[in-house]
Length: 313
Image (cartoon, rainbow, N blue to C red; front, top):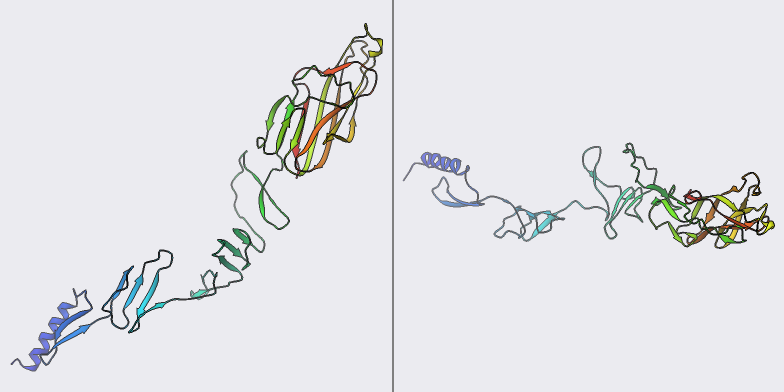
């Protein structure tokens, strides 16, 4: 039989050597009395299925849920999840001492509706900020960038402020010297912002699709047709215009001096400009009126008369 001291040295050498490569949690060693003994060490594992053959204080990283990986410890009879819990919806952050902290009423995630609340635990939009908002740096706007506006509740929307359109006439045959004539001004569109989402031409009218305040301008260049050989009453003709909403004339008159047909005086122009509050689907037209003698007064040349509209708010 080996001496006691020699047994101890052999056991120490065996343990030192095994310590570099043992990967299991159970090994067999010979103690100082020559007895074979089972030594078990705690282990750390990771996976989607809980380990078996566990001992007290084994640790398992449960990766079965990609959005909720947990750390579990074997308490001797079952796996106990090691979890730092908080108020539902809280977003944890590192406090001044580096430990996790929560302020539910100031930083909140609504998991049901996928909403983030800053300064509120009851967000009503995707991002709900209860307080002042600051953006320190912005890129230069492009020509086609949208404007933003806030509604009564502070919710941001894309805005069509400064969206407008311009049309010029192609009609040069309609006699404007007849009361309540719709001036055929919508011939050619020079530009129409947002396609037909805000403005839509229908015959001699323009439909506004969104309620708001609009700047409306009409410029009508006219020429009188001298038929005095056939009818002397056609001297001294004149046409006025007014902007009409849904067929009803509103605002000021656009007027000018009479066309006398003397010394080549057969041209004139009328202009009207109004800023009006409109409802969605209001219909705009320009109405002309005879203000003097009868006779034919036409728009002077294609593209010489214009209609301009711009959304102010």
